[in-house]
Picture (cartoon, rainbow, N blue to C red):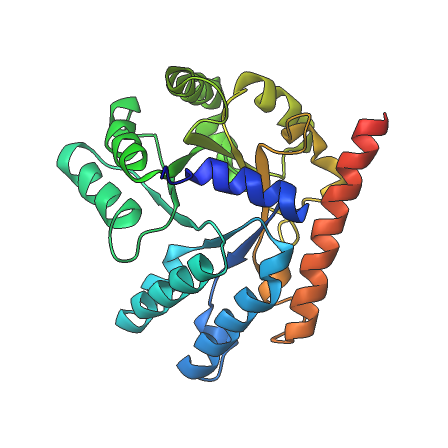
Length: 274
């Protein structure tokens, strides 16, 4: 039996549950009174919001900051997500040369803490993407390569056609795979709503990860241009806006996730009508 790839599972879940929302899980040490509270709340948010989201995105920095306990929690989060049928995007933004890139790829796409997909930094050169592409292919996984990030300072390095060059390389890699969504996706900030349709056209086979919903100011109403005509092809991530929607109130987290999911769906419906 053929095991579905990351993009196949993501598309199936998007359509089955009618959700384009990605749940970011960022366990911030200063938000909790103890590690036990941090662990319990993080896992509870995952379980309670699971049916509202298409995938989950742990931000690796927050788990690394917790030391060994953080790595153990990351394994728990990934295992719980798999049990819930949720594809896992590890937000690590890894990138390096040669054997180091290969080691990162093995660690985060095939190792004990591995996710289904990994965010990757391409700014050491396109050759550095290949080890990640190879391991993703071997494991039915995917990459989300930084193209146009959500932070205000991105223009310092990503302007002047640099982002476009990265996007064109991802399109080339995706074209080599044939039909359907590629295993090589792109990170494009939801904070650039006026550009999303252009990025979608430029990377027709790339799944898009759109960070910036909620705390960074992006609004569901503005994001329809990132999606394919059937409403697939992109997920929009919210982290603080869900996990800490009202302090540590779990009901508020669920309500926030519902609001983001419904807002994205409404925006797509309006776009179809127009």
